Every structure is written in structure tokens, then in C-alpha cells.
Image (cartoon, rainbow, N blue to C red; front, side, top):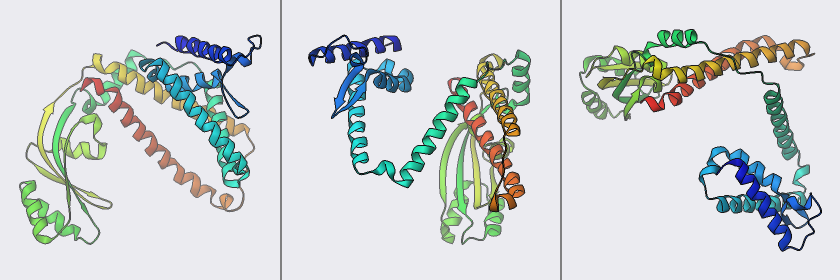
Amino acid sequence: MKPRNIYLSLVMVAFLLMVGCGTETNSTSKTQVAAKVNNEEITVHQLNQVLMSMGNRANHLDQDKVMTSVLDNLINQSILVQEAKKAKLDRDPVVMQAIEAAKRKVLTDAYLQRSATQPPVVSDNQISAYYSSNPELFADRKLFRYQQLTLSSEGNDQALLVEKVKQIETMSEYTDWLSEQGVDYKVILNAKTSESIPATLLKPLSVLKKGDVGFLKMADGLLVIELIDIVEQPVSLEFASQAIENHLTTQLQKEQLKQKIAALRSQAIIKYMGDFKQNLETAVTESVPQADVASDMKVKSHLEKGLEGLK
């Protein structure tokens, strides 16, 4: 059901509720009341707001059931809020801080939405360049079937574990030896396409041949891999172009946002105080790689989702 139809239906429900309760129809505000909890009103506008937040999910559900469920949830919420106020929880310092934090986030999101510029235009040349520069995701895309064995470095001689990997030919040989040594391990069978595999694992996987066993030294242990099978699953530029365009558009929007925040910061008067003033240089330096890591993770996740239909 289309959002407009949902809204009209909610208005009709409110009207029927009003008539059933014998309420006069000459008050615009009262015609929008869907229910009352003690002396607190729940309006059709509130119902509609919840439905809008559900997005397309509401379109595929039973109209009457959705409205009833949403209204019941708002009634329960209203009851709990009233009880919280009776207990003076709205004056609790921790609760007040949480409310303020939520308020700041809502205002921040609202400002970013209102001030958002037109989405950047991604050219065909940019799409083609991205496709060419990431062959492992597109032209050379593959499906890898492999066993992944993880070992913790805690309480284990990693040098000995690595040396044994170099001597064996199959994963079963290695697991038999580990069992004899009383070493705990975990084996997982995976079947993933290139874009679903972290870059740190994709490179070593790509150099292995079917049946090969390799390993990676991790910060907290050892990762041993046996490549069971590898299947070519290339994606053409035509099929990948939409996912690439969406990804590049998102990246450009992030860059625009970054520049906007930088411009606003340059106009603001910012003073670091106390320990933050003393550790400013360290704090700024450490914040950069964290932001980069988060960005990389989002890129991988977006590409994986964008290419889902191509698998």
C-alpha cells in the first residue's frame, strides 16, 4: 500500500474514533486524535511518523494489523513514559544526559539533511576507472571455497605451529597433529566471493592453488587456510556499473560532508582544556587511522551488498 493511502486510512480511523466517542467534528486538532492514555493524546501524526520510519516494509504488511500494532505500541510507550515521570526518572542525571545526547543527534541529522547539496554526478569514465583499478572485485572476481583454521597465540608456541604448517600437505594432517599435541583449534568451511573477503585474506588466497595450504600470522594467533576450490565468476562493467556508481556517489558525499565540517570548524572558536589540551597532538594523530579503518569497512560492506544480485 502506498504511503499516501496509509495516511488517508489513518485519518479515516481517527475520524471513526472521534465519531464513536461522540466528539464534535468542528475541531481540527481533535480529529487527529487516535487514542487517549489517561489525559495524554496519541495523534494520527504520531502514527504516521512511525509508519514513515518503517519505510517500504509497511507497504507489504496488512494495513489494519500495522495500524493496530503501531497504535498499541504507542499506547504502551505512553504508559511507560507516564510511569517514568511519576518516578521522576526524567530528572535523573543519567537519563537527562541520554535525552540530551539523543536531542543532539536528532538536531545534527536534521541539519545535515536540510543542508545536503545535490548528489554528486559520477561520470562513466570514473566508473570505468574504478572497475579497471579493482580487477579482483570485477573482471577477476572469483568464488573461493576454503577451510579456515584459527589458533590462539595464548599458551602456544607460534614458531612451532608455523613450522609444522610448512611441513604438511593437507589440513587433515595438521588437525591430526594439533590433536596429538593437545592444541585447541577451530575450523570453519567458507564459500565466499572476492568482494566478501577482507583484503588481508583475499591476497594470500589469490596466490594459492587448489589443494594448497597457507597461513597468516595474526596479532592474536595463527590463521591456516586450505583452498578447496576456486571458480571464476567475473562481473562485467555493464552489470557492475550501478553498484560502482552508488559506491562512488557515497564516497563523494562523504568527502563533501568532510569539507563542510572542516569549513564550519575553521569558523568556530574551539579551545581544548585540561588534559585534552596537553594531549591534543596525540589525540589528533590517533584519530586519523581509526576514521580510515571505519571508512574501509563501510566500503567493503557497501560493495558486497551492491553486488549481491550478481553472485
